[in-house]
Structure formats: C-alpha cells, structure tokens
Image (cartoon, rainbow, N blue to C red; front, side, top):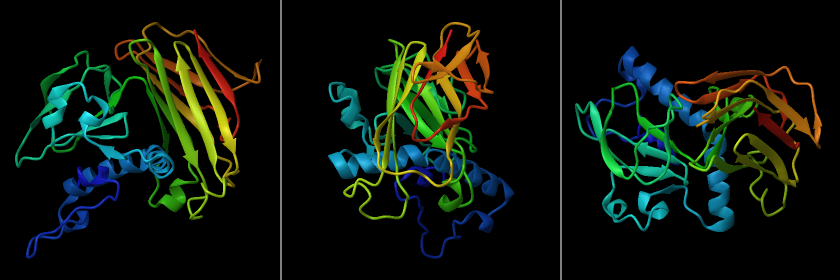
Amino acid sequence: MELGAFYPYSRNHNGKGAKRQDPVAWNSTFEDISRKVLNIRYTLLPYLYTLMHEANAHGSTVVRPLLHEFVRDKTTWEIHRQFLWGPALLVSPALDQGAVAVKAYLPNARWYDYHTGEYLGFRGQFRNLPSPLEDINLHIRGGYILPQQSPANTTFYSRRNPLALTVALNDSQLAAGQLYWDDGVRIDAYEERVYLLTSFTANRNILEIKVLHRGYADPNNLKFTRIKILGVTSTVQEVTVSQNGEAIQSPHVASYNSQNQVLEITRLELELGKDYTLKWS
C-alpha cells in the first residue's frame, strides 16, 4: 500500500486466492498505515498534477529513475529499487518481507527527510535507513519547492482545501518550483489556455510567488496558508509579506526549529492567482 500510493495511478494488486488488499480487510494497524500514506499522496497531489502537466506540455517524465537526474553518477545506472517523483521527491520503499531497514542511495545533492524536514547530512553514498512498518522513506531534494494541499476523502473535496508550500533550500540557499492549476475536469485546459501557472523562487531569505499565466480563476477562493522552509541556517526573528513592493498586514505566525533548521510560517492568507514576496530575517 505504501509503495502503491506513489505510483502515478495509485493502486496495488491481488494474487488469485489471496486475501484482498483493501485496508478494511485486514486490521486497524493496516487501516492506519494506509490512511497515513494515502494522506501523504493527497497532500502532494498539486505537485503530482504539475508533473503531469509538464509531461503533457514538454514531454518530461513523472516517475523517473535516479539516473535521469544524476546521469553522470554511474552508481545510479543500476538502481531499480528507488525512484523519483519528478526531480524533487525520492522514494525508497521497503520491498523485502520483514525488512526493518532499506539500503538506499542518496546521490550528490542536499536531501531532507520529508517527514521531519531535517537535513540528512550525507550524499553520494548508500545508507541503511530505518524503515518501520508505518513509514516509507521519502526525501526532498534541495533546490526545489513542492506545492501541497490539505487532504480530504476525495479529490473533489481536496481541491477546496488550503494550499501550502515546502521550500527545500540547496547548498547555495536557492530553490524553485511551479504549480499548474485548472478546473480538474476540462480535457483541453492547457491547449485552450484555461489554466493558472504560478512560479516559486527562493533566494536565501526571500521567496517570490509570481503568476506566469492567468487563464483560470478557481471558484474555491484558495489560499496558501502554510509555508515550510527547510535548511534555514540562522534563527529567524521576523517574517514580512509584501505585494507589489508594499508590505501588507498578515496574521501569520512564524516558528523556527533550530535543531532541524526548519522555518514554518502558518496562518498565511496568500490568494492563489496573485503575486507575493516573503522575506525572513
């Protein structure tokens, strides 16, 4: 179930005569694990949807082997038990029965634990990563920004929930990403230009949110309410939000975890489809 949640078409398979794999056919532990990992998938649907758009518009891959991103690293050429969502999310599942650890390869990049936001501190080597039954190893690559959304029971209701960003800074304190958004129903939204495309760019202590194409206005009054920034090396005293060069009042709350070097900004009200600048100091 944990692996199947990260297939583009989320599913698992039954063997003939075997116990069926839907969570309620097992026990409460399996139900809880399935619910947790499917909530992660639903949280990341905006990132996955953007990858699907890029595949359609530019021919890129959604799920890709490590060698697609690290082709000069010959170690990645033989790795088939890990994979990436786009360039930014590394999935290292436990594939052996009874396994409590995964021998995973982390290529030469800055990697953060998806669950905690903590920088791993190593790269370009294999490591035995703990893999308890209730967790799948997920790591975010520094230099990328992942759009997210609060999950619900179905995508219909998820699309009405608040948006969020996870900003993973690289060694140069830079990161970038995009969000493609349309009504989720129209087949030719991109070809008919009925969509919204937003870019996110982080440079040290500044995050720019800019709309690149305004062809769609979402009826759900969606807002970015939470932004998490990984790899912030200095204690943050203040966060300001501005629009068109003018500071705006915002009821946001900022908290900084010096141990994990994670800055989390909550209670934001940044409307989807508008430009903003965030600065922390």
